[in-house]
Structure formats: structure tokens, C-alpha cells
Amino acid sequence: MEDREIGRTESLCPECLRRIPAARVRQGSRVFLEKTCPEHGDFSSIIWRGRPSMEDWYRRLSRSPRGNPQTSEMEGCPYDCGLCPDHRQGTCTAVLEVTKRCDLRCPFCFADGSEGGSDVPVNELIRRLETLSKREECVLQLSGGEPTVRDDLPYIVERARSMGFDFIQLNSNGLRISRDLPYLKKLARAGLDSVYLQFDGVDDSVHRAMRGRPMARIKSRALENCSRTGVAATLVATLVPERNLDQIGRIIRYGLSRVPTVRGVHLQPVSYFGRIPYRPKDEDRVTLPEVLELVESQTEGLFAKRHLVPPG
Image (cartoon, rainbow, N blue to C red; front, side, top):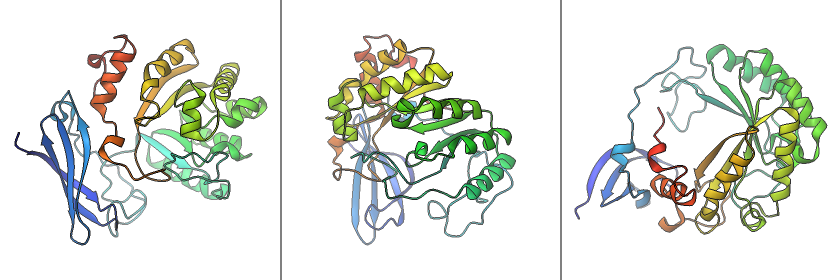
């Protein structure tokens, strides 16, 4: 079957990070992102495999920029950091990194967190929150590293709530909140709404492969403490071939068994950046149509492909 270009975009050279043109190219039911760096040559990666087609699923969004840019445009995206005049969308969820420290050393980690990292000074965090609160109405997610290594996190949550953030979420591996109920109570009193809980499976064999240690009982205790304090939770699974694709249905059913504390399940195909154990091949990637198929088959149709729609 003849290759067919179905769209163009911009990407980065994986060797030098130069911004380069890229094309989405259909080969049968598969779509590849193809690009050429003038220095390092051609690259091709699978981005879509199966049905529905990418064209049927893809929704074009019109530009919806907000006013009051906070930085000037210098080199352009992705090299500039911050809300520049060329920012194309308003903020839906603001992810605020509060630390680079972490109490795990996961083989897969987009942030490459470690025990030896540093915290963002609290005064700098307050300044960023003030800037954001004046510019956007959005969900606030506190992230890291592992945010709960900070003893002053309840104060940060309290200040964010006082600035008008209506929904505050904590991105966490669950270690501290599983063992330190008084700490979670402080977070709840300060205004924490939800924990975005790392949850890659229900078996410790999966946790050992993904996070380097058994975590099943820790996740269970973390959810029990969320229930005790009235804090909601979303189960967040990083999906990696040969690691935990067989866990999707079990994760969903586990979440259903923990309603109303668990409000949702977030399935995110692995992205190979940050700390990763190997350079990926196409077979190391899982694409959205494959996830849809696995959701339907592993829940025996309780959640079917037709129930799932693109965002926007």
C-alpha cells in the first residue's frame, strides 16, 4: 500500500534537539512521524497503530490564546519557557513543579527525580502562583519529583487556595500519604481536593518492574487514607509494553471497587524521555487505538471503544 502524508507538524531531532519539520505518514492502518535533521539524518517513529484512524480521531483546535503574556518570545517553542505572546492556548491544568527530590528511583521517570534533587524556594513558588492566579482560571496540579517530600506542602496548598484556585491536585507516588495520615489531614484542611496517584497495576511484580520495589499495599493504604480525609483520587497508569498492558482491565475494576474515593482512571502510554531503561524501538511503544482495544477486551465490553472519545 502506498504511503500517504496526512499532516505536517514540527518536532525535534532526538540527537541534537534542533527543531525540524515533521510529517505524519500513513502506511495502511499505521501512522509514523517522519523527520530529517540536516546533521543527523532521518528518523521515523510509530505514533498510531490500528482503528479508529488518526484522521477520524483527530480534532483540530482553533487558537485560543490568553492575554497578559509573562515572558518575551526569544527562540520560540520549545526553547523558551513560560507564557509568551505566541502561546497558542489558555491553560487547562497548570502543573507546578515544587521539587526535584523524590523518595523513589523509578526505572521509568519523565522528571528524572532523585533523592539528591533540590526544592523550589517557597517564595518563588508563591510568586509563580500569584502570576498564574491573575492570568488564568485553571486546575492546579502540584508535581515534582515527589511533592510530599516537602514538609511545607500544606502551606503551599493553603496559599494557592487563598489565591482562588478552585481545584488543587497532588501528583504523588503515595509513599508518604500511605504512612503519614496527619500529613494528609493537613493537606486536606489546607484545601487539597485530589491525589493524582501513580498506579501502574495491582501486582507487586508490576511495581517492581516499573518502580523498583513492591508497592501494592502502599497504594491500598494511600487510598484508604484518602477516603478517611475526604480527598479524592485518580489512578494514573503509565502503560509500557511487556510490563503492564495486561493490567489495564484490573486497574479499571480496582478503581470501580474504590468509588467514591477513586473518581477516575488515567491511562497514559509511556513517553520515552527523562529516565528510561533503554532506547525505544517501535515495538516498545503503545498507541491510543491499542489502548482502546485493550480497555474493551479486558473489561469484557464494560467500557467499549465507542464510549471513548477524543478531547475537546
